[in-house]
Structure formats: C-alpha cells, structure tokens
Length: 129
Image (tube, rainbow, N blue to C red):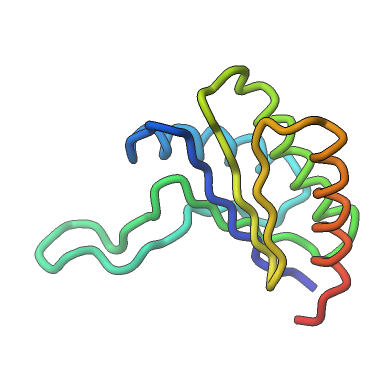
C-alpha cells in the first residue's frame, strides 16, 4: 500500500523562487530512493486567463511512498542528509507530514534528530489510514 507524504522546504529569508530551487534539489535526491513518485505540491487552479493549469506551492513536494518502515525511513534519511549538506544555510528546515504524523527537521543535534525521526517513522507506519 502506498501513501502520500507532504514535504515543505523553508529557509529563513528565502523568496518563492529560492524555495522552488531548494525543493527541486531535494526532489532530485528523493527520486533516487524507492519512492514511487515525487511531485511538486499543487496549491490550486491557476487564475482564469493564464496559461498555467494549476499553481504549485513554493517549497512543497508530495512523495508517494510504500507504507513500510524501510521506505519511510529512506525518505526521512534522504531529507536529513540533504539538510546536513546545506551547511550554515541560515535556518533551512523541512516539514514532513504522513497522515496525522508531522516532523520538522532543521539543524538540531544528530541525537535529537535521531530520536524525533524514529518516533515519526514508527508512528507513521503503524497508524491506520
């Protein structure tokens, strides 16, 4: 069974274009995992008279992932590695939601992140749909 995980990339002081660049970088890395799909988060229909079919949410991604411990863990670990390579990015964060479970990662200690990630993954995988 697959589920949709919503990811939102943010960075202090970033404009929508910067958030778009960051989320597309993260998307490329997530596509290398066993995620079934990684799409930009849609924010609604484009205004009448414009060429766009719909709007995308700046910094937002939707990851279609198998509802298994290994698959969800792989996505979360990919996000952690991506955040870690951001260096002193001035406050980069990624929020993840899978069902009723939410996790916000930033530059916290490795031990703190490990504890939060473990709790998120276990709750997300065992939660009923």
